[in-house]
Picture (cartoon, rainbow, N blue to C red):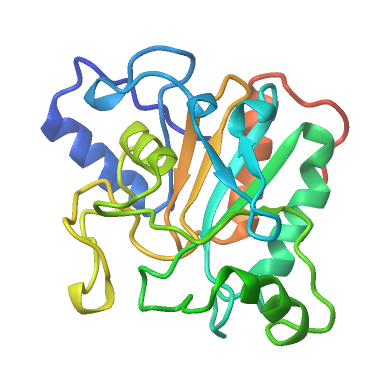
Length: 236
């Protein structure tokens, strides 16, 4: 069961201890509804949008109103335990399993973590299809243009998401492998950090980048069941 952070009057010290305690679980929950969140952040994702990676079509996020939206910063060109070889297919499966619950996954390629996404926008989908993971792999969720998720040029929707949820760790990482300035406490730590946004456009949860898709799925299902939003039988 996820715990909920109530912002506003909570003491900073107590909040930090609470965040560190939840770190072991790999997931955090932000306050829901339209109530002010940490740092006075208000609003929702419907104020933002992005360009698709393949057609340069601008998609305003308000078109996802009424849906649950999972934001994931991804990379597509290297192997590893959290590469498309293992992760892309799991995201595809998550999208398929929970599409009946109005879940939409949005992927944002980024080259700020170990320079693991050096290719051009035009290379990403062909690389996924023919190289890694290959075998004709096609993501069944929307990918957007490459962009920064941290630093001076970060996408504004990520500024909103990060400031709406507590950071997943007190340690940012090795500066030699991180490519942005300035570094801030709420910054994304690595590829595949995840944010869940509710049907009202307000962030609900944030997961550590190493949290497996199986945990993300379980947490989402638990949240849906707790809030009575299950539309039909859910796969586990």
